Length: 242
Image (tube, rainbow, N blue to C red; front, side):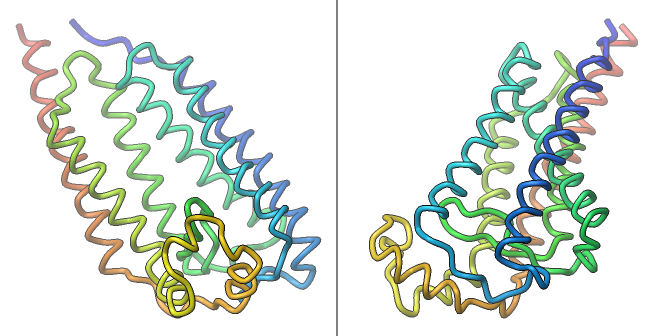
């Protein structure tokens, strides 16, 4: 039996992702107008601990919004996971598109950006999260397309989680190397010495991006996605031929 593709859900989740990207872009434009009137650049400008707390809370709320939408859109766990990563990817890609439209930034896909602040600062070239987003879209479409014929085993989940942790390590490695010269990891995670940590972070300028770490994580994702696609496709075709 052929699975009916949920085109209507795809449309509205896409609309949600694009619209949410515009909201995110507007917030960043306001922040840059306040703290980087000459244009965003490293080192980071110092802001108060209270405002950093608000920014972290906003990022957490962003994840909850995407998760809530995904739970509504998907009837089962795998479908909700697929809609979550799809919406996340659309939001992330259009966030950079809108920044380029309104600010002419990033100047290139290799421009460094602050990607996330939880549990500590993630930094990387714009092209890296774009690659991650394209892979998330591919994975989401495989899950949604094949439905009951989807082949997604425990090893695939392990590969996706492991790859994600390795990618996160590539985003945080340079920042942590810089900060751990003066602070312990617990101080960065626990919120102690907040003003001192913020002052030190204000001196941080990205030195290098660990492409080899990133490519290992992205490579694991690529292998997992390819295997799921091939195995699910064969199973789907077998069902059609019965």
